[in-house]
Length: 331
View 1 (cartoon, rainbow, N blue to C red):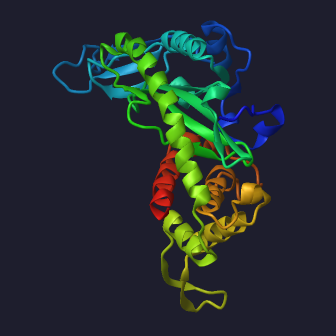
View 2 (cartoon, rainbow, N blue to C red):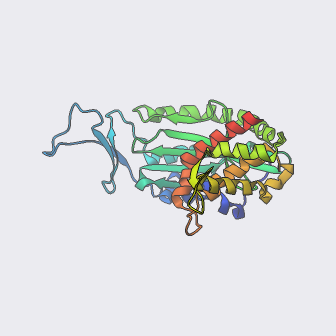
């Protein structure tokens, strides 16, 4: 296992460590809530008719609201929707991080407090080494919502320290917590965390083997580009060229993505530990695009805040998971 720790200088390029607020040094639940702007409670209320009477006999006639400013967070919810208060989540985060010897790195809220997240770095014993010079650090991500958009989740991911690409943890079943917002959600949370941490620890070696399998698998330039085309879903069609004539080519969007990822293959971060010309290099060229290039504003060249979050929590996460499965199939 690697003993490398992510330094302050390394934080600028990692999407995972740019979202939300810097929470290093947070020691109490109240400090965590203050950092994220989450020091409020949420209520489940019943919708009313125009004359002020409760709406009865209608599915989804409940909504959630912040009690500090009466802002509606979610609607169309059922009577059995279970709220996990921010205070409970903060208490849980502090307790779990203390239990796992994890360090809180970032914490924040989205959609005016309708959802929250916290990112914590696991200790060095959970880190992964690819080859002899390419370490990856494992992180724990907490997510919760008050608008019915998702479950309360605790998941794991990793960051390659040479280029700060986020990678799916690829851990085996049982290494995440996902609880639906039902009335019994609070009592189910604490009972699961010990089993999850044990499963994560046992899965680190599997993760290391998978990454090293990519490193050990050689791939020529032509097949590497074919793999890139598969990952971005490139399809040729009839598009206009510079002269306005329709020719068989890639769309402008796919052409741009394709060229950037191919350029990434030759990036200096892909020359670590003889990884050039391997499936590991292709995978990192692709994830570098997902984490660092796709999230840029095309006009200003600066990172888009919503792009950072999307790369971590939504579309970017799904794309990385799909990519690692395909790359292992190639191996």
